[in-house]
Image 1 (cartoon, rainbow, N blue to C red):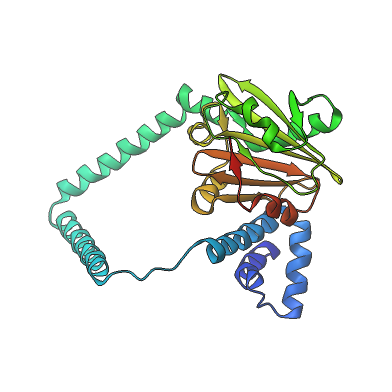
Image 2 (image 1 turned 90 degrees about the horizontal axis):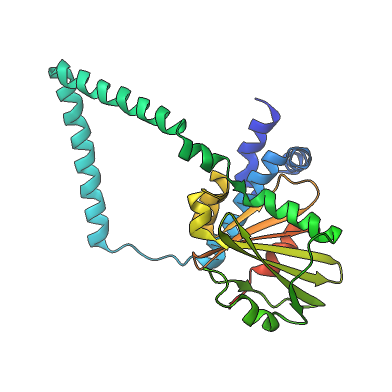
Length: 275
């Protein structure tokens, strides 16, 4: 068993603070030098925090539980009948194999189709966010509209984009700037918060368009995490903190900063405002 495999077995206990001192030291040393394992740990911790704070436990009604049990029993019986048919009727088995082969060929065709290749080649929102953050720091991108508070951006973004722009009042913010851009026909919103400690950049896009992946895309892991928990933390970048969240199942936001990931998440985890 290599170090990554051993670390993966420790993630749940690490999130729950159940590791011994020796195992904890090994775990912390490994995730410091392994971005992949660190990202898995942070995602598990974030998911548990979300479930703990956002999800309410409800008792399943007896009638619903009974229907679920009946459906499971039907499925098991159906699978048993299918096995029996394949045993008694070789032609049925051959037909099923032919269907599987055809399906595999169709999938290979789809993977090589121009439309899907365009999807794979779509700009990655995470990468764009980090690149844009560097451009803001360098002064290459300047805010088109800014003020002392998010309220002053209300009219700027109104009716300019096809998704609700999330405007989060932030304590100790010196000013906030807004940029509207177009990427391959998609309207995008950009916010820049000038803090005493530096710049916090937030890139926002239409969640429906990002999930399509035709022009702007995300990794499958990011989409799954956002869909299930509403949050995704990128633990692989060694220079910046990157946190993503989903607002109202309409807007996906990516925040980039040099501050700690926990601080960045906390900054945007409270109630937000949209215009």
